[in-house]
Image 1 (tube, rainbow, N blue to C red):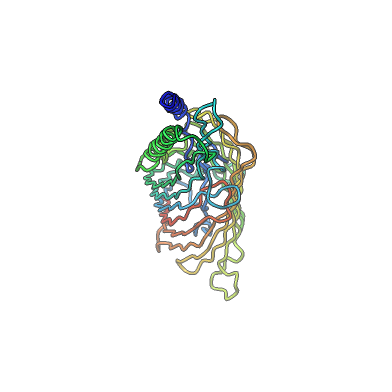
Image 2: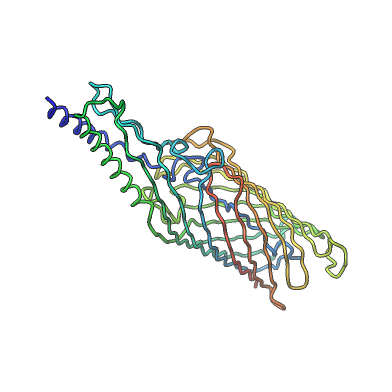
Length: 379
């Protein structure tokens, strides 16, 4: 009788274990924007070029090299994500429906770290002809991304409950622990990988108008799923098989163009940017991230060929995620910013911009630190 119970219990668990693939604590899916990110930089884009007195018609290009470090995924309260946040805690396993015993697993813990190097190349053209007193720019951004992720998960052994359970069930409890560990190791194999490839392309059309000290730029960007993407892999250069449409407007204003003045506002320019992103459904996962609102402010002071400034931003999810695995009410939110320094090459329509930025105050979002060097050239 005892041998029959052990054999039946083990067999029942082995079948149930196939449904435990979703147990892991740090799986990046189905939470407040798919993979906890949007097609929008979470560390800002303003740099020294916001102080450029005019835009030259013709071709232009920008190349940016960024080193990105992600050490945390913020949960609903801003702390590290937990199994409960992700819906991936290991549920108690019933060994035999005929008896009131089960294996109960403690909460799992883990760490998350990802290093990413990204090279972005933007090429475009600004028209000579004016439309409504402004020129129109057409641009395409093609990023190349290299990623390396390291995830650790610690899952304590399940305990047979209640403790007075028959010793005949210990064999089933041991099998339960073995199967959970096997699923954990299989999950880590999908996370702890290195990958590289093209990211998603961005196509932009922007109307730009200068009027005295004021510059207004209004336009729209379309992101296409050109990047490498595998829904069963943790890190991915691409975001998925979906599109993002992002209209927006940016305004800059030069407080005092007389750089030689001794007043505090000499050579100071302030800027603001607002955009709204709308996502289609990821066909690879049947998941649709909610829409998002992005706002950024910046200030820069020009002194000779040098410029110094900083930016601050807010990125907020405005509508709930929908589709397979979506959790209503859990929305992405983060803030970020940091200082930058720029240098204009004398006698050339070209310059460099070095920018450091980090995120803070995030909820349901990755938390990153970025060091970016950008080169801008107009012809």
